[in-house]
Length: 535
Image 1 (cartoon, one colour):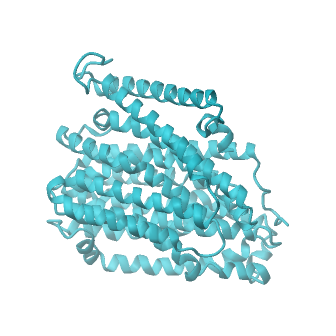
Image 2: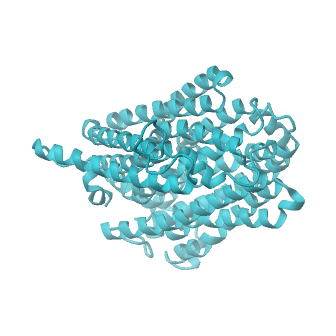
Image 3: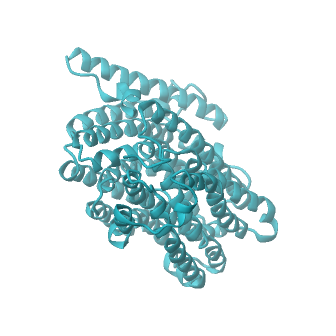
C-alpha cells in the first residue's frame, strides 16, 4: 500500500526527467563550484593560506558524503522507501529521528569548535603556522549540523521521487561561499571562504525546507505530524540506530580517509602542495559526480528491488549502472589526461595562481585520473550493498584494504615523488577497493555477470586509450607532424581541438567495437544502448 501523499513508483519516463532535472541542477552547482575554485585561485593562489583553509575544508568534505550523499542517502532512502508503504508515511521517522539527530550533530560541532587547534595538529602536523587553519576550522565545524539536517531532508525527498530541491543544494552552498568571499576577502582574507562555507550550509537547508514540509503535510495533515510512531513505522524508525548506521558511516569515513592520508603526508611538503592536490581533485571528480547522477536517481528503484527480493532486477540494475558509469568516466579520463595542462591553465592560471602552480597541478591531475574509474565503481558497488535492509560490513572491509594500500604507498613514495606520488597512491588504493567491492557484489548481493560487464568496460577502456593518444597528438605532445594546433597556441584553442579529437576517436572506437561484435554473431554491447540501459 502506498502512503497517502506519497508518489507512486517512478516509471522510465519519470526517471529520464528526474535524471535530466538532477543533471541540470547539479551541473549548475558544479559550475558554480568551479567559479568558486577560480575565485579562490585568483584571490589566494596556492599558498600557505589556501593550505590552511583546505585543512579546515576537510570537515565539510568529510561530512558531505557522510551526512548528505553517501551515508545518509544509503541509510535513509531504503528506510523511507519501506515507510512509504505505511499509512502514516515518513512522518513517524521524522518525529522520532530528526530532533535527536540535530542535538547529536550540534554537540559534535561544538566539540570541533573547542578542539580546533588540536584537530589541526592531527590533520596537518607539518603546517608552519596552524593559527589560520584553526580559525577556519571553527567556522567550517558549523557544517556538521547544517549538512546533517540538509542530508536528512535530501534523502527523504529523493525517496519521494522529488529530486529538484536536493539537487539544488550545492548551487546554494557555493553561492553562499562566493558571496562571503566577495564581501569579506579584503578584511578577513582566507577566513572569508570559511565563513562562506558556514553560510552555504545554512542555505542548503533553506532551499529544501518548503518541499520537505510539503512532503510531511501531504501524508495526512498537521495533526498527524505530532503523533508518536507506532506499529511497523516505529519498528522501521528504530532501525535508524547506531547498529544500522555503523557500516555505512564507517564505509564513508574509510573512503574519505584517502583525503586525510594525502593531506597528512602533504603537509610536510612545500607550501601549496595541499592546494595543488585539491585543485586537481576538484577537476578530476567532476566526471565521477556526473556519472553517479544516474545511480542517485535509480537508487530508490534498487532499494525497492532489494526489499522485494527480486535478485534479477538487482542484477540488471547493477550491470547497467556499471557500464553506463564506466562509459562516462573513461571518456572524461581520456580528455583530462590528454589535456590536463590546457584545462588547468584555462581554469586556474591567472591572478596569484602561477605557471609553476599550473604545471604541478596538471601533473597531479593526470595521475589522479588513473583512479577515477575506481572511485566511480566503488560508488556503484556500495549502493548495491546498502540498498538492502540489513547492515553489511563488506564495503567497509574493501575500503579499508584500499586505504591500507594508499597509506603504505603514499608514505613510501612521498619523499621522492611528492604530490604525484600521493595521487598515485590514492589511485592505486581506490582501484583495489573497487575491484574487491565488485567481486563481493557478485558473491553477496546478486549474480552480476562481471564477465559480460567486464567485456563492455574493457572495450570502453581501449576506446578511451585510443582517444587519449589522439588528443595528445592533436595538441602537439608527440614529436612530428599531426598536431591540429601548435604547442604555443592559447589553452582555449588547444583544449577545444583536443576535446573534439578525443570525442570523435572515442565514438568511432565504440562504433567499431559494436560492429565487430555484431559481425561475430554476438549481442550488441551494453555501451551501444546506454539510453535503454539507463532507464
